[in-house]
Image (tube, rainbow, N blue to C red; front, side):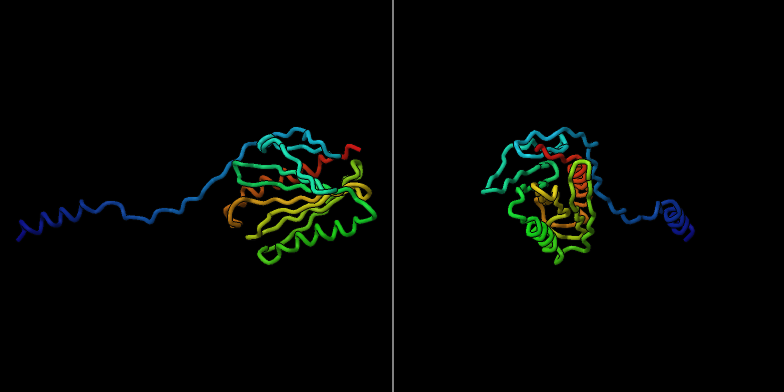
Length: 189
């Protein structure tokens, strides 16, 4: 009996290793390069600093008085859409209302919409940036104007199903580009 118990005791004593632990959760880390900016070279009555990471602006879409440009970020599957219009016949109120209504369409999916006023009297640029939180289709909406002649509206969209947690790092990176665009915008005329 001792001959059987002693080897079993020895076997159980030394056969136990480390307790198995569940595998820890892994998190995707998205790092983007430090932004480098240069002046946009577009044939429109304004210019701004554009991130070199974005594609060059190739096509300007024109529909009557409205002109649109797309600032594409292929590595992030995102685009900042800009629409330019001349203010005509005192239609600034309707342009502002349209821009604000476009932002409000995201309230269905948005957790929050944070408005941030933008004023640059030295460049005659005034506007608003809306940061949209949650699973909304757009994470940022904005507009800029000189209140007399020019009006620009812009929005950020991703080519992916809106999942705030997944696109958050890219969204934050591109919000900095939008803020830089707003801060450096100057009217050419």
